[in-house]
Image (cartoon, rainbow, N blue to C red; front, side, top):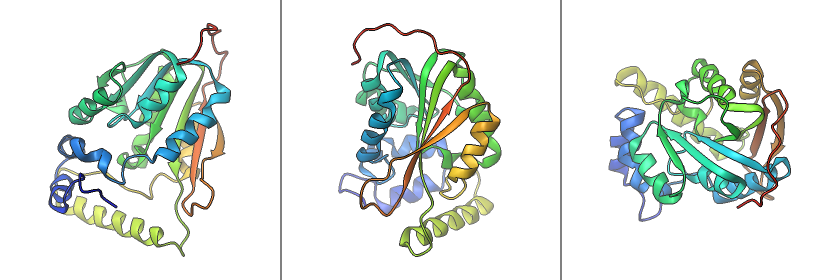
Length: 244
């Protein structure tokens, strides 16, 4: 699962025993060499799925990490791409990945944006937010989008019980529950709290209309979906310049 350039077991344990922010500051230089980075085929499938909805001018990657989602926006947005994360270490890596991006250090539960973006994306971040925290997250994205703007949430769906990943994700979440009960501060990272059904419900509660696209690669046992939340309203007319 990990390349030789990835973190050691000791380093992962150090990360897990600290806060989310400090843990990702610590892990950032090696994060792209772990299985936690969004797979390249999911990123490519996202580009293909979003292309018919474009062109887009300004894009926002919420919880951008080391910049995987920023590479998607950089291909699709003609003017500016922005990434927001609360880990300074991850933002340093994102700057190296997409030097032209605007990077903002902020909490996704209190986004400092207002009606500035045509497209927002998030990849692999929802497990870091308790279900009770998602409304603030989604309300902030809704506020950051222009009328008619699109919010794309890439989401791995829970595996079936006969798949080994079902039991490994269940075991991981149980271990995190125990860890957070006995160690402070909490390290919020759960695989099973952000189901497609619950995320669709919370997106609608935030004011989005929601469609679902299947991103699953042929032959892949683990399913990926792209939830497309549309902010109601008329999208502004975009210039006819070429995309990147």
